Image (tube, rainbow, N blue to C red; front, side):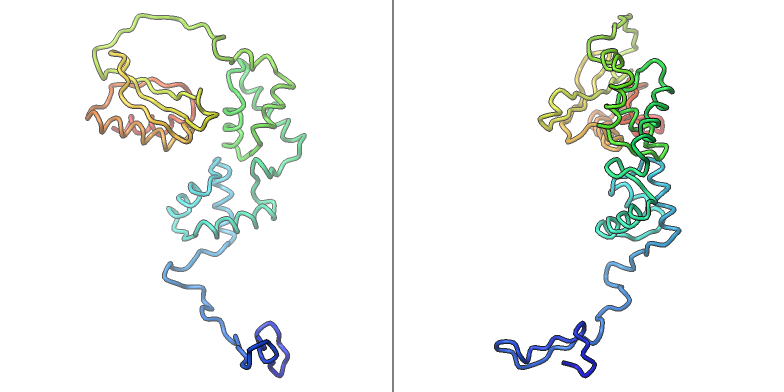
Length: 257
C-alpha cells in the first residue's frame, strides 16, 4: 500500500493468497485517447446541434446518423454515438418514439393537427408518424394508432384493402420498358418476409423482385431499382409507384439517370 493510502491507484497483493508483490497503476497508458483509429470527436455544443438537426429531419437510425456526421467530418464510432445520444436524451435535447420529449396531451394534439392536414383521411398511422418525424416530433406508432382510432375510426375502414374503387382505363404504351411499375408486397411481413418488385407495364413481365427484412427504407428501394437497371441494361421512360416515402431514392435515381 502506498504512503498516501490511495486505494484507487494501488493494488496491494501482499496479503492475498500466493501474492507477495504490489502492482501499481501510476499512469494512464493513453492519456490523450488517441489510437490507430484516430481522434474521436468530443460531444461539443456544435455536435449536439448537428445531432438535433438530424432528429428534426427524422434521421434517427444510428447508421444514418453516423453517415451524416461522417460527411460533416465528425469521427465517431457506434458505441460512442450511443453514449452521446443517451447524454442528450438525459439533457432533454432529443426525443425518440420510446422516450418522447412531449407530454401525452401534447402528443395527442400533434397527431390531431397532422390529421387536420389530411381532410380526406388518406394517411394511415405510418404516414402520420413519418410526417411528424420530419417536424422533429417523434411519437410511437401505437400512440398514433390509438389517437386515430379514438377520434377518426372511420378512416381505418376507408383505407382498408378492397374498399377503394379501381377505375380501369386503356393501357397506352409505346412498348417494353416504356414504363415500369414498382411496389411492395406485405402479406408475408408478419413472417419476416417483405417483398419488393418491379414489373414491366407493357408486357406484364416481372423484371426483378427481392425478399427484404423491410421494404420501407428509401435507400434499399433505390438499390433494388439500380440492380434492375443493371440487370437489363435499360432505363424506363417513366415509372409508376404509390406515394410511399420508400420510393424517394428511386425517384431521385431515375430522374438523374
